[in-house]
Image 1: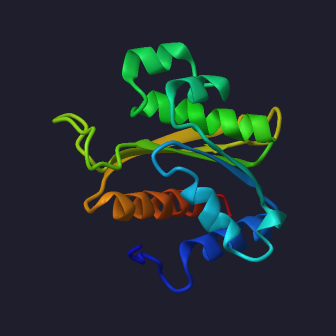
Image 2: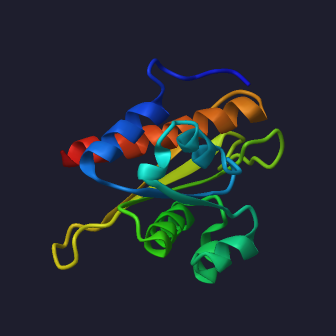
Length: 171
């Protein structure tokens, strides 16, 4: 596996930020197959802030975790609406401050002109205090290059970086 890690790596910086804020996180992953959760749990003491990860590789698995049939049928698994629903569903099911989702095409096949190999949607959902109108979800689309393993690692680290940016923006 190629190492895209900074020093200190994103999983450590995010862990420090979550711990400092008293926040928690859960993930739901498709194309990364659990790598985001794995990176988070590589950090000693991550049980202070990490709750769970769901690997929802199929349509049925996504339905089981709260993604609507309408989103999947109307937009496909690799789409902004599905990434949004995935991030919200895991945040709410786990009762965490943050939910993050990845859904994309790691390759080497499966791409199209509209969604080439390396395309991913990363969803980040925040749970605000009840009644504070501070709950939101963002989704970003990225396209990465490389082989399957390289693309998966880039996606996982990008997802963690997106959450870190959101946590830091709240400080």
